[in-house]
Amino acid sequence: MNNTTIQEGESKISSFIKRIIQHEKTIAIIGSIIAIVVAAYSIINYVHNLSYQSDCEQFYNVPGKYFNDSIGKNIVFIVLLVVLMFFAIAPAIMRKYGIKKGIETKATLVYNICLTIYLGYVVGVVNAYNLELIMRRTNNNVINSFINAHAMPIILCIMIIFIISLLCIVLMKEIKDMKYKIVKVIIIVIFSISGFISAMLMAYGTMYKLGTEAKDITKYEFAEKDNQCYIVVSDYNDKKVVMKYYIKNGKCYVNAEKYYFIDDQAVFSYKDLEVPPKIVNVD
Image (cartoon, rainbow, N blue to C red; front, side):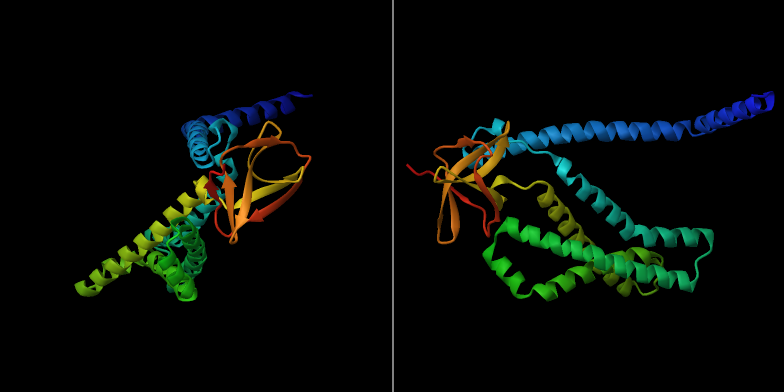
C-alpha cells in the first residue's frame, strides 16, 4: 500500500468525520427524538396493559393477571395514519413553498387542487370506516338505523366534507384576499364546521381502534373438549383461559361463575359475533 492510497483513505475518513460534526445538532435531535419515542412507547404500553387487565377483570370476572395486551399490534396502523395525514396536507405545503419561491403557475395550482381532491377522497374513505367503528361502540339503535338506511349519501357527505376542509387550507391565500366579507365569513364557517367534523371522526375512530374495550370485542376463539363447549377469553402460559357459554336467540351468553384452563388439545373455531357476548351468572 503506497502513501497516496493511505492519504486518500485518511482524507475520506477526515471528510466523513467533518460531515458528522457539521450535522452534530441534527443527529443529537434525532437521537433525542428516538429516545423519547422508545421511552414513551414503553410507558404508554405499560399503562395500556394495566387498563386492559382491569377492564377484562371487571367484564369477565377473571383475575386481570391472566390478560395481556400491547399497543404494538397497532403500530403499523398508527404509522400509516400519520403518513396518510401528512400526504393529505402535502398539497398545501407544496403550494406554500411554490408561492414563497415565486414558482407557482396556474398549472401547479390546478395540480395541487386535483391532488387535494383525490387525497381528500382517500381520507374520506378512512373517515367512513371510522364512522362504522363509532357506530359499533355507541350502539345507539336509532342513530345506527338512520345511518344504515342512508349509508351512501352519508359516506359521500363525509368525503365531501374532508375535501372541503383540505381545499380551504390549500386556497387559504385566495380566501384571505376576498373582497366580500360575507363570502369570506361563510367560507370560514363552512371550513370550521367541516374541519371539526372531520377531526372528530378521525380522533374518535382512531381512539376506538386503539382502545377496544372487552365489552366491545366480537371476535373470539371457541373450543370443544370432552363434550364441553367453551369461549376463549385469553392465552396464559401456553394455556387457554376459557369459560362456558350458551347461545340463545342468536346471542352468546358467557357463564361468569367459573373459568378454566385448557391446552391446545381441543377443537377450535374462530367466529366474529354479530354482537359482543353477554356476561351472566349461571348457578
